[in-house]
Length: 278
Ligand code: 5RP
Image (tube, rainbow, N blue to C red; front, side, top):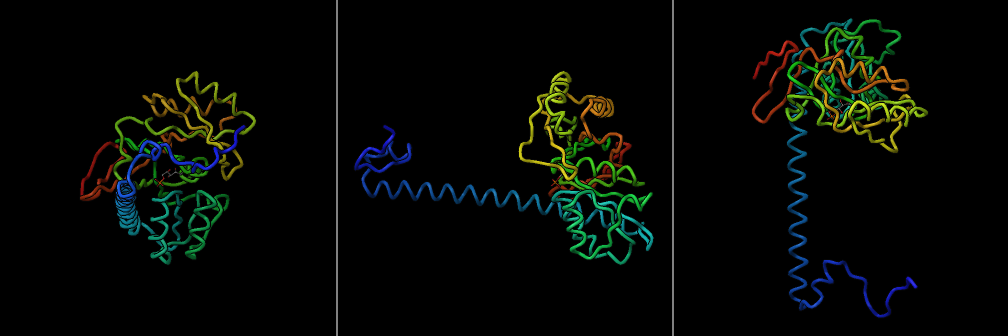
């Protein structure tokens, strides 16, 4: 019962289809599989390398944009994620030209500190000159979906204290309508099912991001298939659900300017909807 058949090796279904092959045919078959695996991993490496370069270009564009505006009293709000990490590494190179930074997550705090950038608590800082962060989606008016890295609540808080929101991303994040990326919603754990039912009533399909706890000790529901025709209205409706801490629509805190890196340059978007390709 449940024991292995005696004298037989357990083989993959793929091999058992070929178990009448000669030894040479089997070796050729293995070589073919190996070549296909290498090709796949090389393609993956190529794609992610290219996207990393675009993130880096967007980060550099943001530095060129903010550097002339900074002085020794300036305070910079810093977002979270892989594009924000590129920005932090570039910001470190000009760390003597501004006063301090306010982080939007524990991870960002650690990276800024590792570069020796002075950190400030938001409670000690009523006003930030600028906030720079990535996005999961952005439309032509600067409305965004954020929270792929589960840092949406602190990101929204720090962004709301800043004069200007500068979004940095590769141009795959630019969309005509928000919502293809599942909308992250930070929820008090006790209210998980209650909030999920309300999100279903709004037409979404919430999925609990299991195993993830935010820096604030809460959970994330990722809402699929939500029709976000009016970002500002949807942001407010979701925030009104009891148990929701924050949702990843950034319409109240839309980006003022965005630097979206593409293969052959940067597109600079302004919240008025104007576009400046460079
Ligand atoms: C984290 C965020 C990030 O800004 C967003 O997920 C984009 O991340 P990345 O730059 O890694 O693509 O909102 O909560």
